[in-house]
Image (cartoon, rainbow, N blue to C red):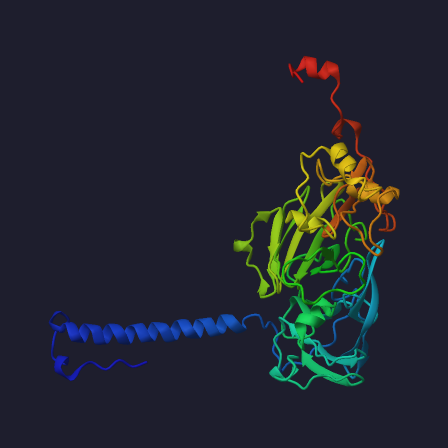
Length: 454
């Protein structure tokens, strides 16, 4: 921008400018700065593009150009090469899905899975994705976080016509960035996402910076409303979600994450929950957040954490070295999110006289078993033992037996299993802790020695 001096001040010295002249020049300089800042912002907005869209690249090869991602309880979508283009096929269809033993629901998914299989490629790859609709309703697919032509963005009625039942649509675009992204329906998304139409996208860098991970995991965080005794997620729910999942599975149905001592582990979290952010906490480790869905986090901005907040509609990628053997809990730290099908709108029973309450209810409700007077920790164990009746197709407050007792957690809970040696990567046995490193009941001699009175 060229700044013209006011005519009346051409022969004046700097000190002879009028106040009006000062304001004029100051305003012009401010506009110049604003234009520069806008240019910088525009550059920053497109900086996630890390390859030239006009450049042609050889298709990235799994096991050669990248270490394939692992999707616990899920799979990776296969592709075939056609004239240098990676061709994928997604099929939307009704799916009978098991969230955990004892809890199934009639959902909507992709290729027979809930959630859909992970789409994996390399930046610079040209991808062609066919979407066949076998649902009773129209749908679309939005490629959440990807930079692409607007006509491929997948918003029904805005950037494309909806895919009607029985139709197949074609999407084609070049991957111009790397990172962790997601895909989901963007047509009646309140219903269709709540029914299960979501999945992960992993785009590996064309030229990796730093060492490749030894274990690269992808986990989708989601929440559902499935009333006990029913078999269909409720898309109309707004706040009271009672099934919280990693990759559409609730503990004890979640597959563990495996690592060998010394492995570099990467975990990619995506969150397409309807309403909730999720603070995911990993026991036994500190990690660094290396990427968001907007791109890599500069090394100067990375710092150690043990909990990462994954906002709804976003992804976060963490990395650490597996140097601490054991069975380590990984879970959402919103406490209701590690339970399943919790009971709500019930009277508070903490501190009540269980026997007196049972006696009072017996005449009207024979066989009633009062629970909750000292918490809900034993609820799942009683259900598992079979002497507490619950509605069909439900797992209310159910956890799982562990090596040292009942694990009173469900929902968004899994286990990182780190071992000094993994022969086949499928070791799911419990960790055998050294006795000296195991918490246990204190002895009378120990209490006396340390002056503890109980």
